[in-house]
Image (cartoon, rainbow, N blue to C red; front, side):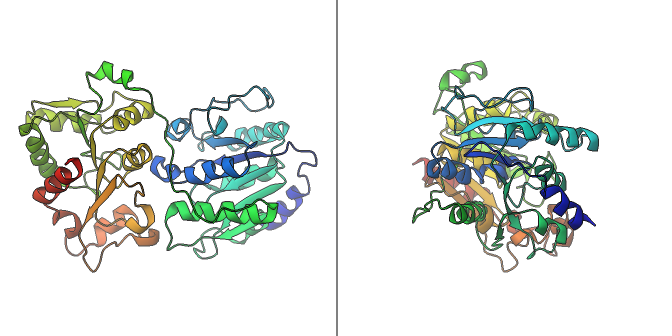
Length: 390
C-alpha cells in the first residue's frame, strides 16, 4: 500500500523548477552531520551556482553548522541577493515531533520553492523526510538505498530517482560523497579524481572569548562527558582519570576549559566542585553550539571522546586527541592532519563497528567491563597530549 501511494504522489512532482536548487535534511547528530559537510562543500564546488538549503530540527545544533539564515517556507521565494558567503543559502526548521498535519502542511508549502533536487543521506532520513520530499513534488531525489541493512522496507525504493548503496565498511564522509558522485554521474557533472575530506563548522573570532576570560591559544579544552551526560556510556573514560589528567595540566600551568550542553551542566558543575581545581573554566550549560565551536577553534588542544565536539575540533584544525573504545574509528575517525586518536587493539574492538550495536547494547553485552576504555591510562593520554603540544 505504501509503495502504491508513493507512486501516485510521484505523479504530482513539479514540472517547472528552479535550476541548481538543492534541499538536504540534517536530522542526524551534530558530529554525524559535520561528517556530511564534505558532500555539501563538494556540491558547491562542482555546481558553483548551486543554492543549497538544509532541513533540520530547531534544537539539536545542526542548524548552527553553517552561517545560514533560517527560512520560513512559503513566505518568501528565492532571491538573487542571498548571501554568497556561506555555501548554504538557508535553513528550514521542522521538529520531527510535530503532528502529521503540520508536517504535511509544511511540505505542501515547500512546493512554492520549486526545488530541483533533494538528497536523503543514510543517517538523516526519518520516514517523514521521505514522504515529505514526495509531497513537496521535488522531481529529482537522490537517496541511499538501505537494502544492505534491511531496515526501511520496500516502499522507500519507490522514492529515489538516484539511488546509491550504503558502503557500510567505509568512513561516514565517504558514504555521503558516494551519494553525491551517483547524482553527478546522472546529471553529467564532472567528478574530481580525489576527494576532499575537509569538514565545516561555523565559529566566531577570538574576541568572542572575552566573556569567558579566555586568551586564544592559551587553554586546553577537556570533555569529561558526552552522550547526554550519561557516565554509563561505554565510550566514556572514567571521571577519576579526567580529574588526574586535569591536575597534571594545572601543575604545568595550563588553563583547562570544561564544555558541556544543558544536560551535562549539573554533572560538570559537580565534578569541578568536588575536585577543587584551581585553573579550570567551567562553561558547561553556558554556551550555544556556536559558542563552544568558537572556544574549540581557538584552543591549543582538545581532549575528547568520540563525539560531536571531536568533529568540531577536526573541522577547525584544532590539535586534538580523541579516546576511542567500543565505537568504530574506521567509520567516524577525524581526518584532519591535526587530529589524533588513542585506542587499544583488543580483539573485540570495536564492538559497535558498522552500527552493529547501540551504546546501551555494547555496555550490556561487554564481558570484560569495557576494557577498551579502562585500559587507557592517564600516563598514555598525558604523554600523547605532550607530544601533540610539543
